Length: 99
Length: 170
Image 1 (cartoon, chains in turn red, purple):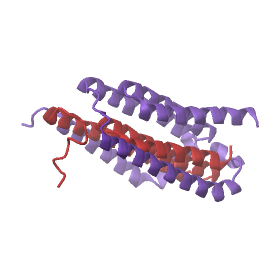
Image 2 (cartoon, chains in turn purple, brown):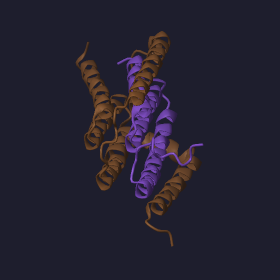
Image 3 (cartoon, helix red, strand yellow):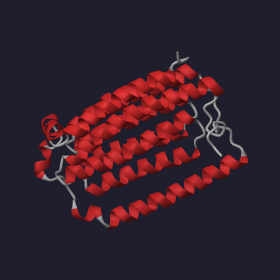
Image 4 (cartoon, chains in turn purple, blue):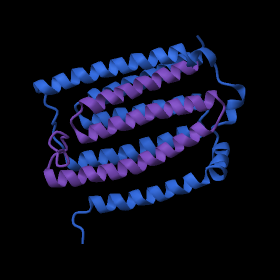
């Protein structure tokens, strides 16, 4: 497959994730859509790494996956803590830090 | 069109379909499951790009680790559906879809007009690029410092998650 196939596929995945982030009101769903956007970016990195014959892209994806694991662990812990205090995960009702 | 290309097209279509199911589904367990399907499709695409190590990592960490964490939290919290369609949120959804379609067309125009012209197939030497050996060699020589920094980040994330999710600090 040409490089364009992978790039367009990752653009589509990124856009689906972006629309999900903008429309969803549930914090866990927003979080999952962010993971989807990250996967779209990862696909671009791996595709360029393979077509340019350079391993740096795949090493960067390795680091992205490690950071995503750390991010989802801390983020889900924050969601659990918020749910314990406010009994909701609706991001319209979680607005203590809004001015 | 060769058999391999048809296979890649089918896997790509499955990835897009599972992503759409994930966003549209009202049942959150359903969306986690379609997300796992999406990750598996992406891992297959990584394999077609000769990135074996990243493909295994995708299955192990994303589908096996992160999504199980999501499933745990969803089943633990027992959240009822809060997605009510008031007038304002419908307008927001339309606006978001318009932004998304504009963004997507912009990116596709850019990709079609530039990158896909040059590279039409994988270079021959790329076959050994994504093995554990070559990734590991680069990781433990030129990228040793970021690698150690990531291990420290994961340690901090474990401790932070424990502290945050604890019931009462004492």
